[in-house]
Length: 333
Image (cartoon, rainbow, N blue to C red; front, side, top):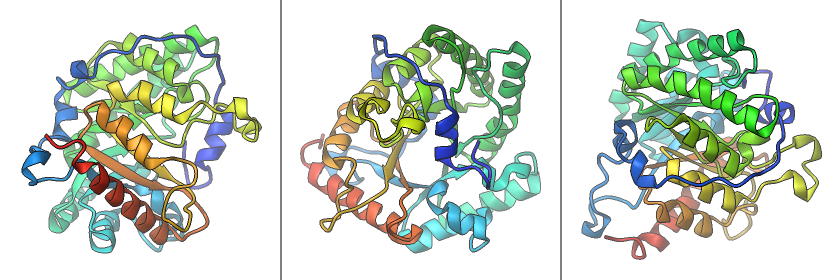
């Protein structure tokens, strides 16, 4: 989906919009049983002891997409850059930056070694451009499922806990739910064979409707299938993005997706003079995340244009650090 000539907004403009219907959320405890979620929590000892932070901070590779596309940085250099420039010890890859390397053992071995050299953990791979997992055509949906297999295997090789996928489909609300659930169920079954989770991001169209996406995860009914709530991706229709009803409430959406979350995307675009993100109340949002019991990595995903990519990542990092410090006493123990 996000090849070098296609932006996230381009994808969102082509996604399908639906109408919300009620959904009943499953308890977060159900999904804590899955090993790939607990990997993100494995080194999270009690915060009351002061030995670990309330949550960890990772870096989504998309934050550096302009540097990567220009050749100033490449995928192999990404882990060391995350560590040296920002002091970040977890990285989230985007498959479009090494699209032809999923089955290149030599390349993956080099990438894994570079992570080890920098003491950086590979957290997940964001997978785009592999077909619609909810495609109404059975053959196309099967192809999309099988196209993701190599990324499951690559994620396992690199030591990730999950791959992030999309739930694009078409049809009625219910048809899209059932089609997306079918593709995700089959992919999740394959992922389980490799101890890799399959997580879905709110990424435009019905997937940006928190009720719909949570109902999809419930329909899949497997603990290895979860969500990656993104704080900013709640536009249901980019062609009408200046209209209020084209947007799903981000706080409601994250609340609905957090019971299934295996990762979290801290989207930022613009900052005020106080260092706060102007579109999202981070203190409020991180309370939603923590109230759900999540204590894993929170991934920085700067997507703005007002700051350089490096400056935007630093601003997001500082904001998360500040919020984490402010909330530490409230959520200790």
